Image 1 (cartoon, rainbow, N blue to C red):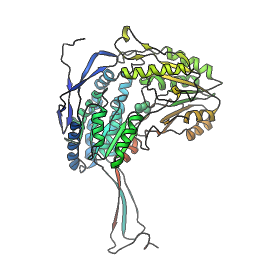
Image 2 (cartoon, rainbow, N blue to C red):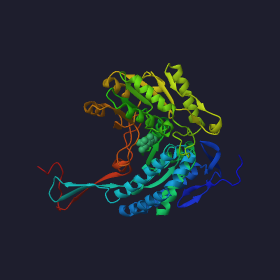
Image 3 (tube, rainbow, N blue to C red):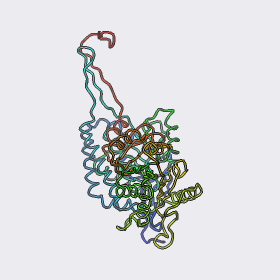
Length: 500
Ligand code: UN1
């Protein structure tokens, strides 16, 4: 549909200025609930744009690393306050480009606010240790030091929260940043960068380069002036980034796929478990790394749980996330919708029982969007592809289990290890599951989603590469330890040799 107003063009932000890409090209960002709506045109950048941003960040690092951390924190505090003021507008922008419902985009912006305040607070901590030396008249301490230019490649499902998980700890630690937002959701990162700039982040400290992963992302990860790379996205791309970073020993943090599970035991509060499975499975249209795409249910409550769960899922209202009555929005784009549809076919062919959903929603209010019915497969075997592979859409597999040991085997029997949950009223089982679930996050009597910014976020196995985001763990990634010994004895003292 032709629009009377020319679409807004969003440029790159390099060295404190909004500049066009050297390619002179821009791509369209459209609303996944209504593809007639053009959110804006965004720079389609080249490798040279990425390199220019790295050069700016490298230059700015010289002075930014010397700004006292409490002063850096003041900028972050101001940014957090601007985010609070603009929360509603930014949430609407996000729903328009990403599709998730307004309540959830408000949550996403809130998560960025929380992270910004939290990391601002770290500006007056960033603690190291002092400890007695083993030798007399010698002082020993450890302190954190910044690393340099950090490249960030961020996903579309949490368009502001996840960039904030990376930008805020990097900045408070004294690093500079080049961020490449997901092509589907760049506006939210523009909004975040705008706010940080208004709050006083100096030129060159924070740079934004839009475009594809294969061009901009690759250029950033290959650039030898980038010692730190932080990526959230697919395991497939994470593996490529890991290999690119290896020869130069770049610090590389990867947050990747999940195949998370909710375990429902025979003593669970079933109403609560149903609430959790609906929210965990279909919140964000199942497009969370933490989505509860598997629900393992004790055989003695299986039928009861399944009938209540399916009834609830059938009643979910799918639609435009800006409509207050909508409970589940569209898939992010056509490719994602097609992935979902292909997994529905895979599930049927594998013999899983389609209990509800299974179709694309088309026609009428759905005609212009990438909508899919919330879908539940029952009687799934744990080794089915739909129960093993990350779908990243509104598809939940229900798996019958016999006891806790069986549940834990099923839970751990996937290539990923992000989040797991158990519903039980038995404290022994709760603790046993907490101990034995090999994931980065465990919930008891709550779904697999709902991580808070001051606790570590990340996963085991093919979900990650050992790092964690958020919390102090993020500071650990964006700094290096420096151990300092000061000998004031005025003589040579040999550690391990002169101390007996
Ligand atoms: C993600 O799943 O991609 O815990 C991030 C949660 C959110 C973050 C999710 N706070 O679900």
